[in-house]
Image 1 (tube, rainbow, N blue to C red):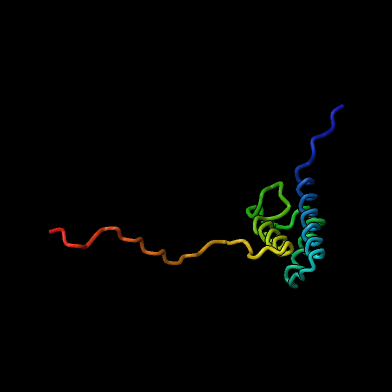
Image 2 (image 1 turned 90 degrees about the vertical axis):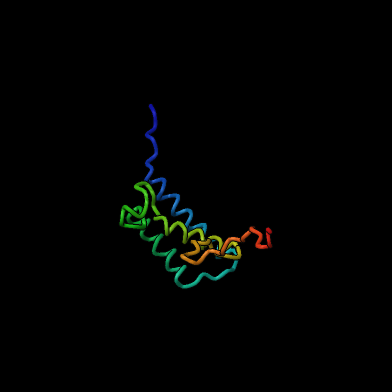
Length: 112
């Protein structure tokens, strides 16, 4: 008799809960204090994943078999990086700034 294939939603729920636990343990172990917002974020996401199996309601913000939305996963990675003591948070883009003008290689000296 074959075992049933694992439920992808249950796997995603366990993976998200384990990632949240690892993030909190890493912050506690390293002695780096998380901000109030980061602590509240970890608590609320953990509570929503345990209750509903996922931490977001809008299906457009993440996959069907994912427990965290894309932005929640990014923020979780930033918290883990902060707990590990890495210097800068992840870059999210440069915005609409001006580009540097390209260097001109043409010569303006007299060609007479």
